[in-house]
Figure 1 (cartoon, rainbow, N blue to C red):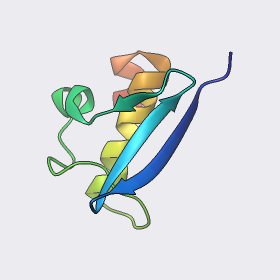
Figure 2 (figure 1 turned 60 degrees about the horizontal axis):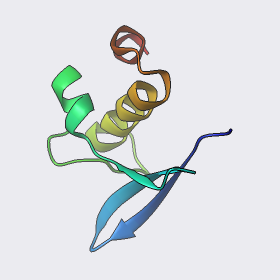
Figure 3 (figure 1 turned 180 degrees about the vertical axis):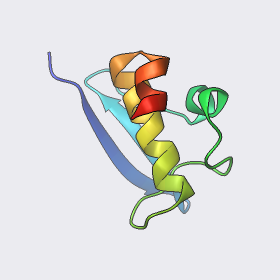
Length: 71
């Protein structure tokens, strides 16, 4: 089964959903690992929001804190 992550805006905030489970990815777990953006995820620029999203995606997909921190 393939995992996909789908982002959309909800009331101005970026919401990321993991498919096919349809579960929402939150920044909480990645913020415990490294705090790039306490305000949450974002995209479209080089900054803290996209960096937090990248960390959260790696952590969720690989379920490996060391890998997510290093990459």
